[in-house]
Image (cartoon, rainbow, N blue to C red; front, side, top):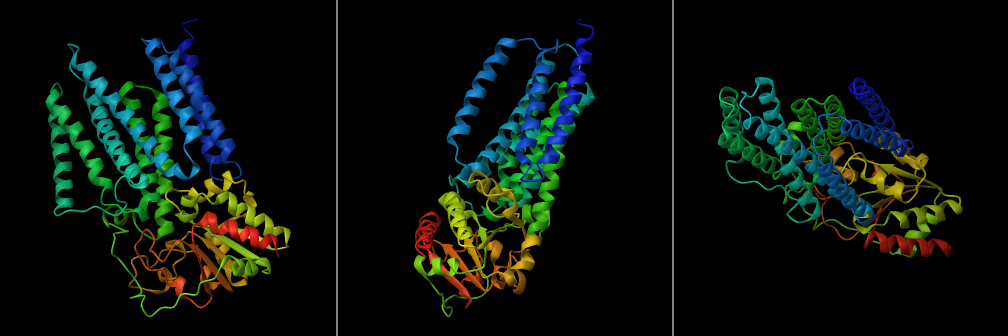
Length: 464
């Protein structure tokens, strides 16, 4: 029986890898995303069980303790963490994945140091790559988590000679790694390169502003996958190599999609300090007029419209207004209004943030429209209802060449016959750019928390 066990493990790995690929494919559509997530989870369960049956496993007791503790933490997090906090949660999970991979390399180096044999060159290279990618992912994700959670400022944090210091640290890592390839049994140098990788992760994310968080989250997700793949080479586990490569590749593709949605290169995202406080566009606001309305007037505009397009943004997430928004849409549909949702790829603080929130509120998938599909329809739309969105609807991206967001594709709500913007105040978005949409003649501002205002709109619409 034991002779066939390795073959059975590899076959199980093949089935698990197939489930990962099918799951990723299904994650490409909101309608099949849950099924894709389930298939991928089944694949991971098979991979874990197969690995536990491997004869190289030495201590099942410690593994069971880890499974119990991890499962308990995961179950509590699933119950307690709000959907609005998913960006922070994803950032935290990316960091833990990177840390786990880096610890595999550290543990393997420590084990090899205790043997009388020399550390092989290929193992040394794998460990150094694992330490670098995993370390950067861990601390970088922790900084991203802190920014998203509000523990530190979400604005870019810069200081003099920042880039030269980063370059010097990177050179130091390369030099230290080169030394370890020649003299691998040097523990202080190894610990030094570990420390440098951790510091680089901090300095990598600090200068990136909140407006670029969707790109950063997807990039760190890709790096966590690459770290896992490198860990697979360290411990010679085919499943870990494949799973990590899939996560790394899909995360990188998603990163490119996010960059395209912002019309920015990845280099400008990482080194451009987009979202820096104090940036403004369109001149001063002292000579601009804002047209404000109350919920009763807003309800009349919505209730007597033939078509309404709802544009959700991060303000909706902060106020946890997604259920109220769904209730408003249901009331409008009962009155014969055609209701659609316009989803910008980078709305919120992580890729798919708005889709996740609206899915939680059971918004029908056919009502969700991406930017390319919905933009041509705005000219025939009676009312565009913007809920907590800012930069993704700013016309300056289309018309003001001096604006920092010029060229970024936007949802063209200003082309609708009327636009209602629900917002707490006149503050700028993540990019720190004043929004010309707020001052247009066809734009009406409804000030207040998204959840409170939408709730009042629901009450007023019911009375029409």
